[in-house]
Length: 276
Image (cartoon, rainbow, N blue to C red; front, side):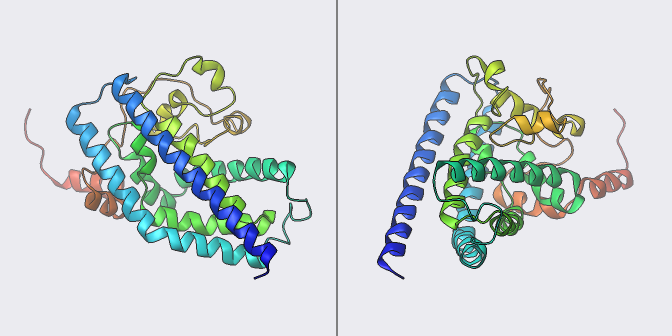
């Protein structure tokens, strides 16, 4: 590795570490704000189970995936970053902004597909199983969901020709928005803000118990994608989480992916119902 390449790598790593530190700081600030002035009050038991399960998922998933994600993206970028749609653009603000916009659109499409494809939904529904809605819900993902997403992100690197450090920086930057739109808070001028970005009110709808309501508002940062593709939905959901199944700890959270609602409904049909 040349001195120039080494310096660029060190600079990229420092930027990613700084962004990650700021994202964690944002998480703590939002956690404090929602504790003091929550938009919606959930039972204390539900909130506690949610926070413990979600943070455990974050720690375990990151322990497993950090090396896999970084090594996969760097390996793919090393081979293909010079061949994609944006590869001929000089490194600078224009390329960064275009990469960010295309990446946000790509994640919107992946999110939409995770709801529409039964195999992907099997893993993505873990994120929707939270009976609470709080900033830690942004941590609640099945490890297989994240593994599949890594492959999708590698495909993005190939198609768009961006380096791995840029993708990792965009990912961490998007983490700010994931924490923000999962926060159980009321945001001033949220109606106007939601015309540009995904806000807690929009994403709260996405966590509705009703499938007809939570199959909407797939955006991560920009809300324009939901407008363009007709998936925007503005309402206050009556209930949060999955209707039939739930997970109260990390083991149940992991196992939930292998139990479908269809099987549970069939099982309930086999079990005699008591008189009311």
